[in-house]
Amino acid sequence: MQNADFGLIHAWPFSWATGGFLRVFFVGLLVVGLVVVALGEVSARVWTLPELVRGAELVALGRVASKSVTYLGEAGIQTTVDMEVESVWKGSVKSTNSISFYLPGGVLGERKVVVTGQPEFALEESCVVFLKRGEDGRWVLVGFGQGKLSVDDFKRRAVGLNSELP
View 1 (cartoon, rainbow, N blue to C red):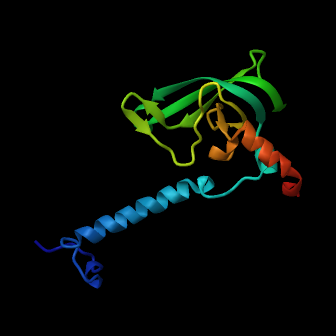
View 2: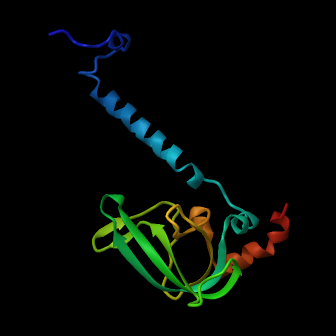
């Protein structure tokens, strides 16, 4: 039986049958390229404090009350952070003065999914969060991991706020 190469394979210095390494390399390169394109906004872009505020529907100072992790099957693991709100600086919260927001990744039993750039939230930690509604209507961080500032980080960035304003 004749090889169906459509006249293209002979231009390569190898055949597909013996070019296993290069096939894997090119497929891997394609996958990495697609991931980079899909995560374009997550790349090394640094958000200024005014950009975080403009991009947020809700800016709040609060204390992490609880965290829970949910297994989503093939979609992975997600962490839900429940925060008791001390002060709202932009937007509003329900009368309960608490908010829940969602992060990709987390630890569930022996399963651990780490998302590069995703911030950690410790129980009882006080922090400022910059949130917007995701496509599904739930709260998510603005600027990925940059949407969470510890109180000390916020104070440091706020001191330089005048130099960051346009």
